[in-house]
Image 1 (spheres, rainbow, N blue to C red):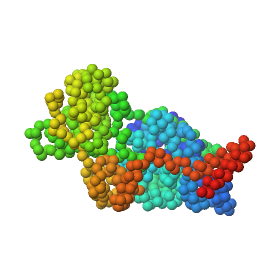
Image 2 (cartoon, one colour):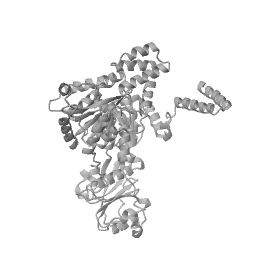
Image 3 (tube, rainbow, N blue to C red):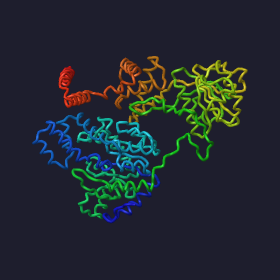
Image 4 (cartoon, helix red, strand yellow):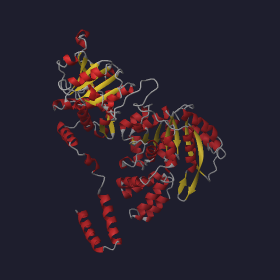
Amino acid sequence: MQNYNDLYPGNLAVINSLLEEIRTGSIVAFTGAGTSMPTLPSWASLIKKLLKEALESGLMDEQLHESLCKEPDDFLYVADEIYRCRGKKQTKIRICDIFKSLNSPTRSHEAIVASNFRKIITLNYDLGLEKAYASKFSEHLNPITSENQHETYLWVNSKETTLNSLILHWHGHINKSDSIILRNNDYIEFYEKGVENKNALRTIFSQEKVLLIGFGFSDLFIERQLNAVMQLLPTTNRHFAIIGVPEETKLNCPLERRKYAEKYKLDVVFYPVKKIGDGEDHEALQEILTSIKNEYPRQIQLNSAQTTDNKPQTSNNEDNISYKNSLYEVDGRKIYCEPNLRLHRLNNENDGINKINLRINVSDITTSDNNYTISSPHEFGLTNLGARIYSEVLLNGYKVIFRDARGLPNYAKKIHQESDFAKINQSESITIILDNFSPLEHQRLLKSLKNSFQKARFILLQRALPSDEVENEDFIDIIFQKLILQGLTRSDIRTVISSLSPRWDSDTTSAAVEKVYSDLIQLCIPLTPSNVIMYASVVCKDGSFVPVSRLHIIDRFVSEALQRPSDAYTESFNYINKVDLFSEFCYFLFEKKTLTSCYMIGIHFVAITKR
């Protein structure tokens, strides 16, 4: 492994300690600008580029440009001046355009996502890590930022990592220009006013083992936060960093290592950085990361549908059934709350009447040997509940089939020709979940299934209130426990509110819960998961509880319910894109010598812009 120990004595010992931590999967990678170079600019190069563009476009005069260029160490102040000349929103959009130029990931990106890091936090705006992961593992990752409070909370506090919580963009990313953090006021709002962000960063460094990669310590606010956090840590709580050193710099290694150890609790691996024109070459960093990847590659976990060593082999339906596919989304994150299942009638009436209306958990159903009928009105999400039960049974390692009763034949011979049932041995234990089951229409189907699979247990999902007349002579030997899927309770709504705004205090959460519950009841809107989540998302808009009027809520409720899928893209082709398109087309006609057409289109274009 390339360790550059000859240039920077002590590197070898640090790398050996680092590799041991990576081997155990306990390291969180924290990446900086160096991982995206030389394809994308460093912070200093970005500021210089924005300054040059402001001068060339006439937004900044030469005298101001010259003065700002003499401030090489105060990038935050320079960024403030760029915002003032160019505009905050326009500057952020331009930054996104610059970082969208990354067409393919760097070698560093590829090595990081392919190494055995538990999760990754990055200061970079680009999506190089996501591109690298998609290329390597054929899986799409949705980038998340600190604006996504629920995902950030899970990322910071969860010890388990999933695809949805692997990469956190701490200072924003190119798909959300408003999330970009660049100038002085951005940092103040993010760290000083947004106390939860400061606390989250402290939690990361106090509870995790972190490896800083390509991080130059030129980000003053991050450097300040790290220093404040690290100084309080015990000496034994040691993190790691891979830090670039300009090739021409003569480094006093013992002194530098002591400084990083005392000030930041970091053991450092140094590497040489070459100068290439106005940019930097971090090829040495790529070599170190590639060696780490080769030593300890990322292990992709088997999904729940695959066979485990200590459980029976599962049987998959042809369709990829998952309750997560239908969960309601708010700000790009999926919200789930436990269904309100109640016991309607017992198998044995002697079990006691006190158990009637007892709440039943999904886990009680998936681990039981009982047969169940679950009844509810049409809009209460019964199909998604069936998918959840299917997923849990499958995850427990047992065979399960989930089918719509309306699409199955009534006779045993034809049932065995169905692909799902053809794979099942008739003497095997299996759970059969039938959606849209009707006691009147599907009696023969149930009898055929019972006769064909002697060890089958049944979960029947019925779009109606439960009836005491379900049993009849055709399948009298099957005893069912009857459950009702009811509307959500205040406790369930509190779970939803907590998911939407996890950092609220108890009093604020309680006020929001009462607002959602009482308004929906008074407006005669069913307390279904989708209704509650949609209503709660309006009440909790922008992360703050706003007790708006019911009239306003209903207006939002109806408008969002009737929103077309295409409405999400209304801003994707804005006036800037249109100006660029017309300009490009006119220039194309000009080059083709079609002056008349170019003139006419130009007049039409001016008329449109004046409107």
